[in-house]
Length: 93
Length: 230
Image (cartoon, rainbow over all chains, first blue to last red):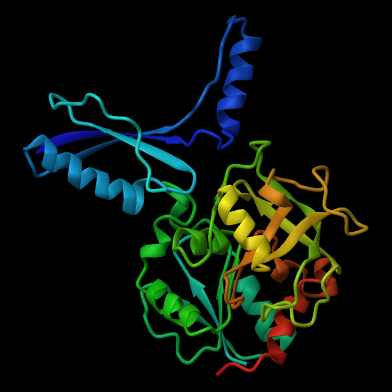
């Protein structure tokens, strides 16, 4: 089994109220100069494939069909020990 | 008019909807378990509120793969009435039967209170007996009711008369102050382009008789009675 790491974040322009709240909390704790904070999801998936391109193809399909909501979210797939650069965040829209 | 109330694991407003239809409205209603495909000849489908599948991943994300949803989609495609309430609205957007998505309230809080909504159109089977501009008082109870879609979709919805309810003040004026969750355009409810599929965050079934504190919500169910379902 090979593992893929999936990062799901709100799209740019979609308000992330959780990120805003974390940012405010960090400021009130005294952390200076905190910029934008975005809170997302991280998912580990094991798949029965070994070629990184195949794993990526399969997991990106999973993201499009279920793991991310393309209306509000972007996703990024990383394969440990695979060629991960450059991989900009993806979305269907 | 035969109603079907879809029941998912985690639905918790199914019995409220059943009560509003069967006992208050006096129409035949039945529950349909999400594993079933047969809607039993129901003319109106209610996708009720709750926390189907525990809101895992995203609210409504898992429920849309339930076998019954194929039948709901067919029912919708045939132009027949479907109403999704709260979690039901979230499920209908996840299933692609309605545009956009519902994400976290801007306050990050679960909000449970009565709100006012302004009816924008009588074109849906659930608003035939409500005039545009009328104000209803309905309860909301959600943590993820912040409606969002891209600017292009929003413009299309406005042009196609798909915005059915907007949050407003007691006088019927939509405003940021009257918007409980930060939704785009103060949207509380929308329909598909055909007008037969309605999704809304407020709970009409929880305001279906005076004993519940108000009966404005009953009007949505009453409206269906003047609709001819082929």
